[in-house]
Amino acid sequence: MWEHLPLFPARASTMAGHVDALYFALVAIAAFFTFLVSALILFFAIRYRKGRNPHATQIHGSTALELLWTGIPLAIVMMIFVWSSVIFFMQTRPPKGAMEVYLVGKQWMWKFQHTEGQREINALHVPAGRDVRMIMTSQDVIHSFYVPAFRIKADVLPGRYTTTWFHATTPGHYHLFCAEYCGTQHSGMIGEIVVMDPTEYDKWAASGVDGSLASAGEKSFQHYGCTMCHRADNAGRGPNLTGAFGHTVLLDDGRTVTADESYIRESILNPGAKIVSGFKNIMPTFEGQLSEEEVIGLVAYIKALGNGTANLPLPVSEPNSGAYPVAPKQEGSAAKSDKTTTTPEKGGAAQPAAKP
Ligand code: CUA
Image (cartoon, rainbow, N blue to C red; front, side):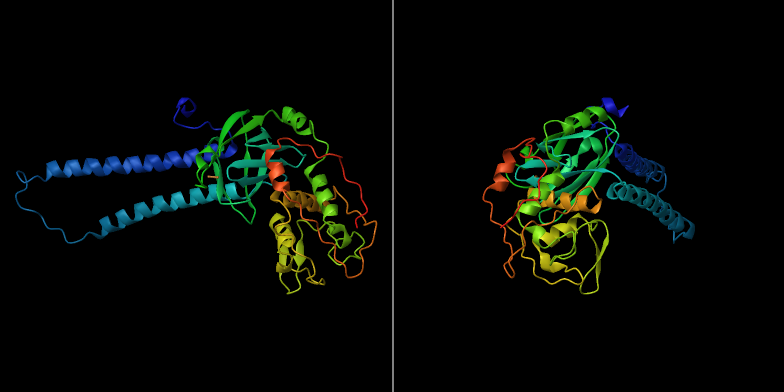
């Protein structure tokens, strides 16, 4: 019935029904008590008016009443608490096996990267009927990824990854808004979610790309000389990254961490933060040298090394002893990628190349 009410957004994800049910229950409870209190005020004003009750009756407490008006509200708010917590946990725990889309927010646009290799600006194509996990970061200020038709909203923060997920149910075009004030053009930071038939999506995702996100990451991995130390034969000065993703890592101070996207990101930009047990703190930081897109590519590549869909290339040339390979600074690489929509990387899958 609400689909035809123009004030209410479409329901296009599996989460929408749950959120709406809670929302309407809250409205119903609030409406019920508004009417109850208003009606009682009216009733008491007439029933106990001065003309009828010239002398007030004093009441000195009623345990039964106290219990009643404490117990009933407690039961109602606990029900709301449990109900909303269930929805919160559903929303914050993406299902296993969800497809992944990376998002970089910036003043004032949304940049999407599909693992298949497609890139988009202010538009996101997704298949209906599949779980989609968003891995999001910002290259400047705080933004918020808000899709009313999916009933999801999640902050997009600089310096870390946040995630959310959805399962779109109905093909169509849906609004994407930024829901966090982020500067003068905040209201213009909008986009479109295009939900497609799954077979059409597969065709779309495969068209015009000649390299996956992981293969772009592999190129960066070689370009920045990571292969010199992160070697498949365990002879490198850095840990072998094959199969590392998603597993528990023992650190040199005895702590353990799970090798997730955030850990990989931190290890690239702030390598000294968490040193893997048995290794030295010798990796230079790549902070300021990589765009968020390049970091995402590297994360996708290391993830592919983790699930066996990519391999670590053996370096062709050995590094000079003592001379640590330092990446050349790339000016304007981030600015370039802002303008590209669906830019295929030239050259396809990278071959192991000799690095100086
Ligand atoms: Cu981005 Cu508001």
